[in-house]
Length: 191
Image 1 (tube, rainbow, N blue to C red):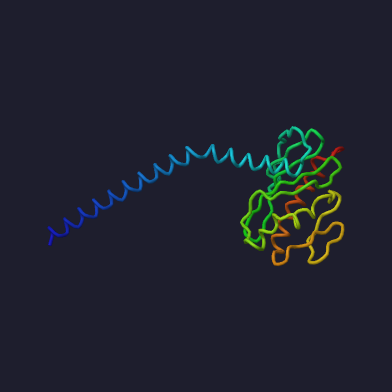
Image 2 (image 1 turned 180 degrees about the horizontal axis):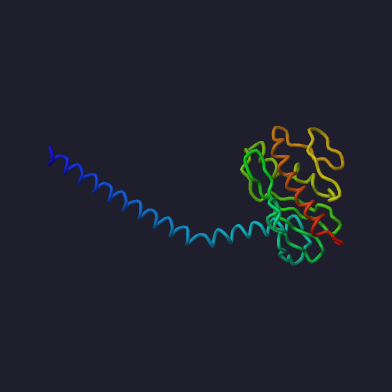
């Protein structure tokens, strides 16, 4: 009996050592792949961001990165344009989680454009937030008033919700409102 117990213990130790070795090798490989691709991934993300800024503030010229106020959680990046406008990367919360978007605001406080950078919304419903029919509603809206989401036709300071995706519509509007509020408090001339 003791000979069998000794063999079982040896097998357990051997199997444990093999499992540890396999796990260590896999971990090292994963670490190597991460280290070798993280700069490429970061560069691609920055490229996507810059394209979004160019889309929402097309006549910006050179963008100068500004420091984001420390009390801001929804405003991720802020850039001042040569033409006096501002491009911001902000966060809103949709049905599928966090959504990152770029918002352009001209020197007069009017939204020049919104571009969804990333989202986890449902295809065919919330993902419609990236389509021009929805996103173009924000262009021309002014920083003076908070935007609200409504079902049906929208008035001056309202955004018409995407049918079946009201939470997503509110999430995008939340992000745009955060950008407009940040602009009014921290960036508007005279502040």
